[in-house]
Image 1 (cartoon, each protein chain N blue to C red):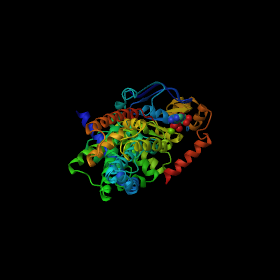
Image 2: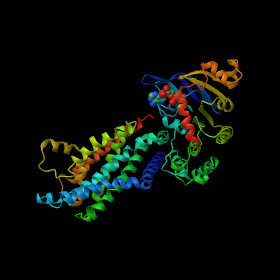
Image 3: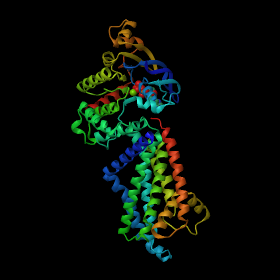
Image 4: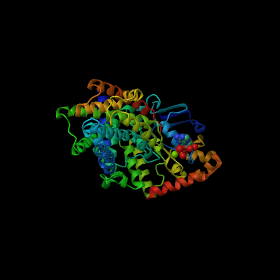
Length: 255
Length: 263
Ligand SMILES: Nc1ncnc2c1ncn2[C@@H]1O[C@H](COP(=O)(O)OP(=O)(O)O)[C@@H](O)[C@H]1O
Ligand SMILES: [Mg+2]
C-alpha cells in the first residue's frame, strides 16, 4: 500500500513536470497550433466546394475531427520523443537513478505527454468551432474526449518506446516522414473510408489511428465507419500494448 | 564493514574495454578517491555502481545490494553528482529539488525544510524561484550538489565534482562534504584527476588508468611504495606518465568545460 502511494506520487510529479514544461514554452504551444489551423483553413475552404459537389456534404464537418486527431498525434509523438532531449540534456539520468521501478517514470511521462496532447486537441476543437464546425450533440462531447485521450496515450507511449532506442535526434525526420505522416494520411482523417481499393483499406484497418479518428468523428458528427465499441476496444488494446512495450524499452535504457 | 565491494568488474563497449577487471572495497564512512586521467574509466565505473550501466563481467555490492538484481535498494542508498549536467533547465531551482524529494519519498514537511537548508548551503536561496536555464555553470553545479544530498544518502558519488569550479566554491564544497562525512558518517566516493584534491581530501585513493587499477591505499602509502615525495611523483612512477599528459583532445575538452563552469 505504501508502495502504491509512493508510485502514484512519482507518476504525479512527472506528470506535473510535463505540464509545467509545456505551459512555459509559448513557442511550442503556438508552433504546434499552426499546422492544424493551416489544415483546417486550407482543406476546409479549399476542398469544401469539391467535396460538397461530390455529394459528401459539409467538408469542415467531416474534416474537423481528423484535424483534431492530427494535432493530438503530433503533440503526443513529440512529447514521447522528448526522452531523447532529456537524454541529451542530461536530465534523464536523474530519473533513471530514482529508487522506483522505471515503469512508474515511463507512466508519469506518458500521462503528462498525453494530457498535454489532449489539451492541444481541445484547443483545436475550439478553433474548429471558430471556422464553422458544429458538433451534432453536446452530450457526445465526453465520448469524443475519451477517444482524444486514448489517441494521445497511444502516441505518447509509442513515441516513448521509439525514443528509448534512439541516442540522438538524427532519426527524428525519418520518424515524422515515414511513420507519422503515413499513419495520419492512411487513417480516414482526410477522406471517407468507403469505396477504397482493397490494399489501402487493409492498411487503414491495421492503423490504430483509424479507430481513434472514427470514434471522434462518430461522437462529434455522427458519420461513422466502425462502431464505438470496436473503436474503443481496438484503441485500448493498442494503447495497452504501446504502454507495455514503452515501459519495457524505457526500463532498458542505458546512459 | 564495506560500503562498496567490487570483484573482477569489467565493462566493454563493443571493442573498447573501458573497465578492465578491477577489484577493490570502499569502507563505510571513509572518503575514497578514484584518481585517473580522462578516459581512464572513472565515469563508466560510477555508472555501473549507480545502476545506469550493466557490467560486462564481475560483480558489485553497494551497501550490501547488487545493482543488477536489487537496483532500487542500491538507488535508495546513494546520492550522485554526475559529471555532466543533469538538471531540468525549464524548472526552477526549487522545483528541481522538489522533484527529487518526491522521487525519493522525502516527506513533505521535512522536504521543504531540507530544501531551504541546502539552498542556503550552496548559496542559492535568493535564486530559489528562478529557472535553472538562467543559471551559470557554477550555480548549476552547486544546485546539483544540493540535490544529491537532499535525501540523506548513506553514500554519495561525486564524479569530478569540482571540475571548473573556482577555488572558493571548491573549498566551500569540500568543507561541507567533510562535515557531512564526519557528522553523519556518510561515505564519500569521488572521482578526480586533480592530484592535490585526492591527496588532501581522501582517506584512501585508487589510481585508475586505462580501465585498470594500478595502485590503491592512503596517499602516504602510495608515496612510500614508490619512494616518492609527492603524489604526483608516485602517479608518474605507477603509470609511467603525468596526469596532464592526456590526449590533446582530452585537454581541450577540459578547457572548454572549465570555461563553461566559470561563467
Ligand atoms: N557509451 C560509450 N560507448 C563507447 N565508449 C564509451 C562509452 N562511454 C565511455 N566510453 C569509453 O570508455 C572509456 C572510459 O571512459 P570514462 O569512463 O568516461 O572515463 P573517465 O570518466 O575516467 O574520463 C573511454 O575510452 C571512453 O571513450
Ligand atoms: Mg568521467
